[in-house]
Length: 143
Ligand SMILES: [Zn+2]
Image (cartoon, rainbow, N blue to C red; front, top):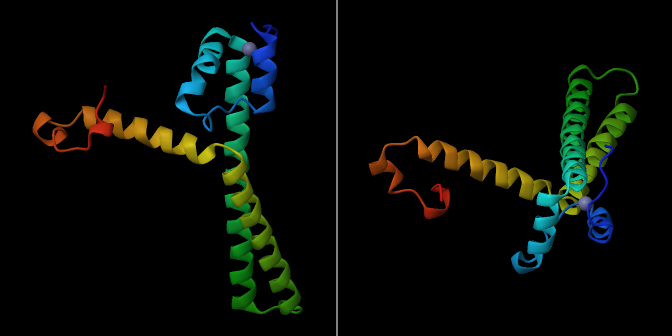
């Protein structure tokens, strides 16, 4: 990342938002979208931050799943100190779920996932025969 930001004022604003403009009204986005188009550095940062967000939510999901699995295993085999272990497992599950919810609220992950799903659906609908495609909702059609 040796590239310099083409406009450090806009770059600093974007950095403060973790390069997420999905929360902005469409008419406010223009300048920032233009900046992303022009600025290699900010585009790379945006990609990096979104990968971090998605990794966080994937990790929280895996960790919640593992704690839940641990809880089920403890119930099944009821080892010594089962109650204590169950509490630890449930606590870990609750913590992972909390992290998951916080990441989903604070970061644009839901937007990114929705966007990816919409793009994919559009690509699929493009390959369908026209008589079926015509019955799909307009937003799935390739513009
Ligand atoms: Zn920039």
